[in-house]
Image 1 (cartoon, one colour):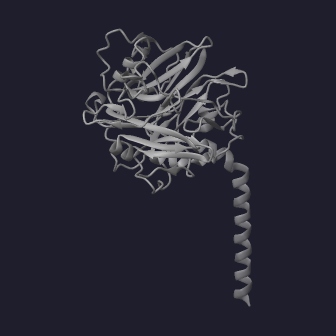
Image 2 (image 1 turned 135 degrees about the vertical axis):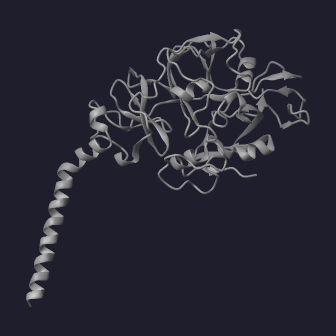
Length: 388
């Protein structure tokens, strides 16, 4: 009996200790958790009571707040100027917008600069925009900075969620997931930014297609080793994602690039491994024909230490395969030209016809996103994957 009483007493004592521990966690746990992750001291103006994801999923990527400095006053030079620091095959984020008068404006943002800054706050064609590049996800995205009647400015938090950059706006210090363009912590939680279509092209393809365009200067006000890749060999197809925090989707190799199109049911991803092998891919999305044109003439920014010496990968661009109601069937010729079977006109990766009956015509671009497969699938697991 004594043993039974003692056993019961010990059980009650243990239960009491457990209850008190849980109560203490509820009372003190949240502040301690915020302190543990360095949130309170560095971010006194961020409302951490509002968040749409577990705060424990947001981890340090190394640098602190603005440790990777955004570019707020970018300078630009004309395409016609001699530029000896940017090789023809180097990748740029191409942004093409029309102003209210219908005039086209084109700007190129070199990845060799974005890889060190990740964010550029800018304005083009009268539209406040910001250009982003997350090296760990190979995610280049452009957003409209206007939201709820305000123009926001963005910086880097130095933190990651699922290997993707977490940004913040300087007006409310809310935190945003770059991959989704969505606020996940703070006053703006739940708000979503408008994505502006952009493309990854070689510098040569950009300046050929838009000779009156501009390119961002490397006179950024910061000293960085522009042209050097700090993520050497990261995009090796057999590499593993950095700080993902979960097992990658097994449908594709994590570091395979994918080009993604949106449809009414969600998204459809086209692996670069397939696009590269086929050269041209015709498909139908939402009942409408699309064609991917590719060209293997763009340096990977995440391969060699010097981007100018990195391996060549394809640039893949999606278009509507028709001109003035004429459906076109595209293919790559033996001399690696992009042709249509109907007229044998010659086309560029930017959708411009440069020889033949359709010379001077341009295909309608279909908005496309390009990322590492693991990154896209961790945020959009419902995505369908194209197979040949």
